[in-house]
Length: 129
Image (tube, rainbow, N blue to C red):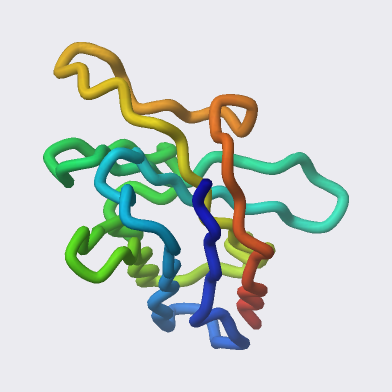
């Protein structure tokens, strides 16, 4: 069982930056691949980024490549999402999620919400133009 709590959201002007953080409970954090998703009003939840258990592999949706960076600290049980060059279309509730790692070097990181088992409550990011 993993409990996730996000923080760091807020209101920011376009072009600005935010750093979202997700704190995980439990002693088995390093057994999970972690992901960030977002959901804008009236839209489906969308994959944003994922990182594997060892931080040796990352995956991003094309729309955030070069602007978002996912990282994790297994000693602190945290996973962060650094968001730069924010755009109004980045406005959404951002969710942290966890899925048991396959520990495979050949499997791509999961990028659908159905593949993730544990979710945080979300943190709102609003970007003004």
